[in-house]
Every structure is written in structure tokens, then in C-alpha cells.
Length: 187
Image 1 (cartoon, rainbow, N blue to C red):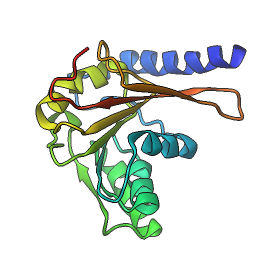
Image 2: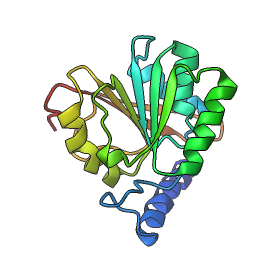
Image 3: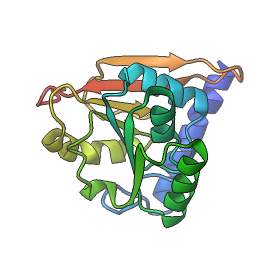
Image 4: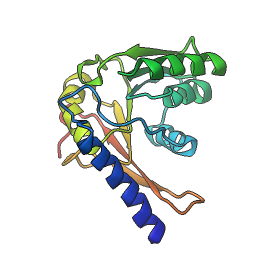
């Protein structure tokens, strides 16, 4: 229980950081850069049911680990989008080192203005307010059957199709959410 409280505290610190530093959904930065742990990346892709037929978009891709893992493990194509040129350079170097640069690409772009219509899977590790701000874009662009998987933060009143808690040896549980596009994303 104490570790869960500490984990909740970490999320609170992220939210306070976002507030104190001026991060908001109306601006380009949707969250501070905090990498998703590899075991959570694996579970996110598993929850989304990623296969080689998928096109995985990661909004706020950081170092590219989600789309790189999707390409390496499942043969999926991937697109990482981030507003930080350093993260894009790092992602491209990581894709090359993993030998998947032919399956993934990275775009220096504002996720709020991105074209995600080719995506069959969208992954997120952004703040809840940022996820909510992305809802109109996702609703407008994603085709029925596309999946959205978010690490740690929900989408407001959109009820997830599935929620999973991922235990970790540290005692901290991670939460991931899955939504499936139905053309409406009814709450």
C-alpha cells in the first residue's frame, strides 16, 4: 500500500511539474519526458494486440522505444511523433541500432496537429489533460477498430474497453488503458 501511495505521488509530481512549468494541452508540450519502462512497453503492445499488420503511432515518442519494440518484436510499422529535436535524433539512432529503421520513422511535429489517420494503434504516455485534448483529433482521424493504449493516464470520461495493472518487482503497479475506436468513443 505504501508503494502504491509513492507511485501515486510520482504521478502527482508529474502533474504539478506540468502545471508549474506551464505545460498545457493548448501548448506544444503535452508532458515532460519520462520514458515508459520496457516491461510496460511490452504489456501496452500486448494489450493492443499488435501484429505485423499494424501501424503503431506513439504520440510523444521520447526515445522511440514503443514503436521500435513494436517493429522488432511484431514486425509492425511505426511512427513516433515528438516536438523535441533531441528526442527525434535519439529515436532515429535507437531505431538504427535495433535494425528496424526500415519499419519505423520519426517526425518532429506537434502531436495536436499530427495526421494519425494511418494508425491502427496509438500509444500515449501523456498527462490526462493532454489525452483529453487529443480526443477530438483521435475521434476525427482514427478508423473503427483502431486501438488507443495509454500508460498511467486516462482519457477523462471515455470509459476504457480494458484496464490492466502491471505489477513490478519494486511493488509499484502501473496502469494501462485500452480504448477501441467505434467511430464515436462513447463515454
